[in-house]
Image 1 (tube, each protein chain N blue to C red):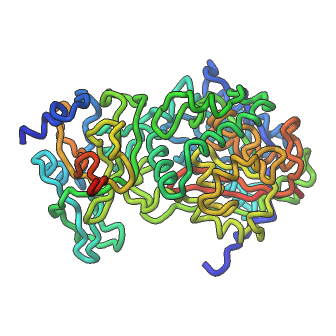
Image 2 (cartoon, rainbow over the protein chains, first blue to last red; image 1 turned 120 degrees about the horizontal axis):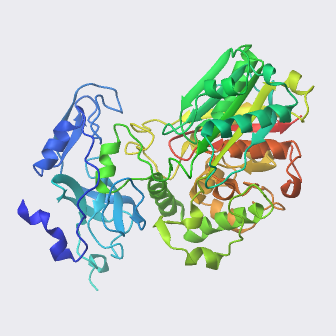
Image 3 (cartoon, rainbow over the protein chains, first blue to last red; image 1 turned 30 degrees about the horizontal axis):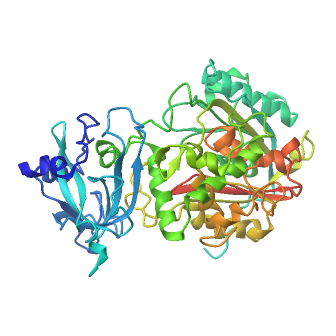
Length: 159
Length: 389
């Protein structure tokens, strides 16, 4: 658990700055955030239609069933889209610019936003690049982020 | 749906337009701005204030005044229709639809629609947080502002369609040309591609010129029946087509798109068929377009989503000069929200009305029989087709 808190030391990118907004956790999302605090990545699952979805909602957005539950997910996904934020546009403090936010399509289904804990100049920052979940902490709040799953230049194959 | 022909179409018209000056610091109350634009629209129509018996307005982030405040300040009489909606840029065309429905159903005779805000000196929508159940999945990670959400969609559009930074820049450049002849525009300086690429990113892929300009100001319209319109001061801008769409799995609140399936397609893709069917037109038949442009990307989305060009063709279309005043489809003829200023798209509709009416002066498009107007950028929005009488 301690290893993940200091990811920035080994990866040479600025650490997340403390501050930012505490998540406005509600009754629908509390169990998911509790799992995140324990470094467990769960995804809702609909027991009726099997849809894996994010975020947790009172009913399945695909079939409307109330029978949904959280279950473990691999944390693997691919980059669906991303932005590089160069100017902080917010009420509170944010990570040091520039930083990357990804929209990640998860392996089981569903999409989540997460900070991509890597340099904006990384050559792996492209559509469909595999990523995997990691956890990091800002002001004692544990958050879900993503790291690249492959090493740099893995796409060169047998070169 | 097998048929789509809302009954108010062809029977109502926009008859008056009013604006305040747009600025970065009005030094006035929103109520004062709203009242000025509304009175200007009433006068423009050739009506007396007492003739107005319906109102509609919208705001997001509690940045405006309710209709009752403006009605009281303008010394209007009783209203038999009044609608205050909590919405952003999705609203303007939809507000016109509501006004038209109210008039055509007999609830009111003349409906005033307005948007007013101190959007630069007061609450700035480009930085303000949007509350709602989806906020917790954005703000803590530093994904905090509307331009960033739009940029995420713009990137996916670039991935799927091959659109480039040059395509985004071309939209900004084309609209600056129009702004040069629009005294109301807050940004009028011409832009070259070299200028564009020398700008820093705000949120990659957006540079400064990709983003709308927040302003203080107000804009208003008056809608009546077509029969009444023909006796008033200005040529009627007939509401010939209309559609609204909130797509499936649109998310938990105005800032949330986690459940949305395809970030490269927005509400325009969903409402296009109904819009054109309702107007009994092919997309190629409109003479000009006013496409909601909180950011350059939404113009590309809208051109493709509405079927004005094919998938992946919007960038080359803009770069070819097709959206210029002498092109096949003049687009955003006031310089758009990008240059005239961000009245949440109310001024997008107002510009369309002026052009249909032949009152756009130096920037009047030569062919102005019909046009399409859109409102909104992402999961939900509205659109109307206006026609000359």
